[in-house]
Image 1 (cartoon, helix red, strand yellow):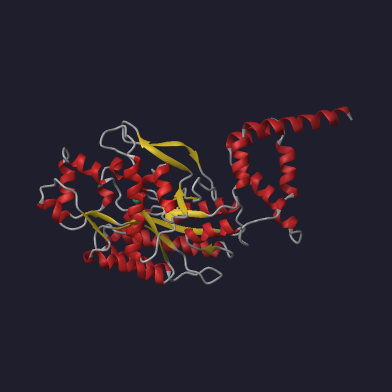
Image 2 (cartoon, helix red, strand yellow):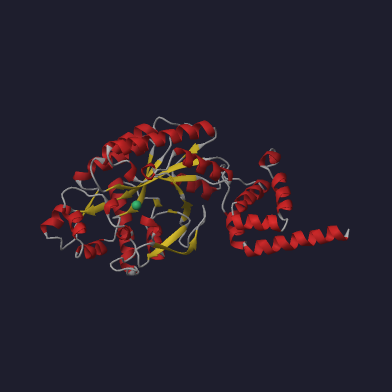
Amino acid sequence: MIVMGAALVWVVGTCALLAFVYRRAFADAWAEPVLRVPVLILESDDWGYGPVEQAQRLDRVVELLARFRDSRGSHPVMTLGVVLGGPDTDRIRANGCRTYHRVTLADPRLTTVRDAMLRGVARGVFALQLHGMEHYWPACLMHAALTDEKLRDWLTRSGFPCTEALPSPLQSRWIDVSTLPSKPLPVDQVAAAAAEEIAAFTEVFGASPKVVVPATFVWTDAVESAWADAGARVVVTPGLRNESRDAEGRVVPGEHSYFNAATGPRGVLYIVRDCYFEPSLGHTHRSAIQALQCNTRIGRPTLLEIHRVNFIEEERPTQHALEEVTRLLDAACAQFSDLQFMDTAALAQHYRDRSELVETRIGARIHFLLRRLAKISRLRKLAWATFIILPAWLAYLVTRPAALQGSR
Ligand SMILES: [Zn+2]
């Protein structure tokens, strides 16, 4: 009796201690809704301003995605993080690279690109998200160009240059990278620019953006507020918010952390994209499928980051990327009969509505909580070291979703 009492005190005390030390992880893992089905979304940023050859590449992506359907008949969706504008190189060249001029997707010269995007939307395989007016802060770019010949060439060569070619620090839009480490931009300018890009998106596409993907995942409270005030409902994040660049130009995350369906002060809902599927960097469909398996096991959606650069280079790497996407979708459909394709705005709406995709049974939620906590290596080791793994394992078995069938 005494032994059992001591064991009970040990279990309760240790559980309470671990729960206190890991209270943030416990709270987040519990608060993040559990998805009942595998959800797969391809997220592709940087489309828009750039070479007009994009249109033909977008059409090829459309044809590929349209060949697949989930059990409900929905096609896989590639969200396009749209860059609305970039330098008007003719005008900048004409003024000797002294003044910045912008050209946007509203320009007739880029109509083919915009129309290719809209064709994909009409076919149900593209969803348009705002990535930014530009993939940089124009004043910073012009300042840097004063002393950088390559940048002046980028700003003045004919055509529509790729923003991917810019130095990494300059690709962050919402901080002043004129000198490193970066400094904040004036709040009023930032708020005005964020509102302006939402209005420009609406003008170009005829509908306001519901989802925003901050360039290089650098953004601020002022930016988020302006986006929210202009109608944006969702912000995509890798689980953190980058807030500056250090002396070497590397992004520096702030203290914020995010989980799926967490909401911000102005009501935006965060969706986490932390899986990478970039065939041009050597990522394969196998690692993407592993990500889908891991996320599904813990009741999370899988958002795969696959940038435009995979599809707009030479023919060979483009073909390779298309083949990897095909293999991924073949494997995902074969392995997950209940797989659901949707866009990120639809996923966010499922979370907001606590729709039928969201687990509500308390036992199943505890089960997924344990699965999520087990992913924390240090906590798992502590659970073994303190023998708390035994009651945790018992709780895990008892709450298995199969054992809960019919008890909803
Ligand atoms: Zn980008």
